[in-house]
Amino acid sequence: MECIMFEQRSADIYSRSYNIDEKELTFKPLTMQDKEIFIKYLSQYKFVTCEYSFANLVLWRKGCDIRYTVYNDSLIIKKKDFEGNYYFMQPLGYNKEDLKCIIDKLQDYKEKNNLKYLFKDIEEPFLNELKEIYKQEILIVEDIDNFDYIYTQDSLASLSGKKLHGKKNHYNYFIKNYSYEVKDISEFTVKEDCLEALKLWLQEKDETDENLNYESEGIKEIINYMDDLNLKGMAVYVEGKLAAFTIGESTNNDMAIIHVEKGLPDVKGIYSFINKTFVDNYFSDSKYINREQDLGIEGLRKAKKSYNPVKLEKKYCVYI
Image (tube, rainbow, N blue to C red; front, top):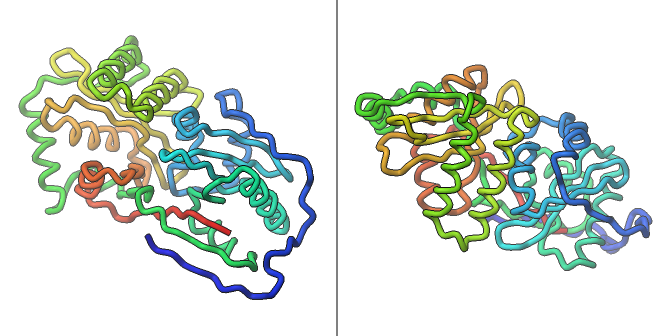
């Protein structure tokens, strides 16, 4: 991991510039009923990574114990990573002149509650603000396992070019060798089929894996709230049985995010088919497609790289 150190600029760098509000921060667990307040703050930004999608926060609200509070008119989100370490995401809705005060408050909470990090899931615009205004030493670590894979919509929808030739072959194999049907998840009984398939998928995995259980519960939740979360979903049936489903959303005029993609491994070419078809049919107006991170899992990293990303969108951990 790359570390960047910023030097001490004055003898009193550890002194506080603001008086910290003595009132303790109290965090409330995120629920679907909090959508309005989150959208109010999130709509002020044009985030590139998947972390600041409300749907993604709902998906992982239990797995990452996502909680929030409002402090100094800013939305503060506390989260847990997959190693059990708590941290804060970027504060939302703050006035720039108040940011130092907010950070001091969060730093105070971090010290009292023994958090490993101050911030994670940080994108470059907020990182640059920290560099500009923070006088004391700051340590920045690239969170490589959580970089998001960004692709052009055209490359995924067409699978054209030498680098994607293998994917196109898998896609062609699927359409030539299987009797299949594509359905929207909103169609009658399709949601129920997806939920049943998810249950069977989990049974075939290691049911003692807590993260898989949390992921499964999160997927069930966003399937049940598809309309409220403005999500789009597609399912593929092979020989009359559900073989794969996928869920995503348009987050702004340029970007769509694919949150879920599940398929039967013994149906050859199913992932190439559902990936291409979903992007082509549902996100033709998006310039870029975010297929999220690889979590440091080697097989997942290899699969995501094989689709020839145009960029890996960086995220950072920050210590102060």
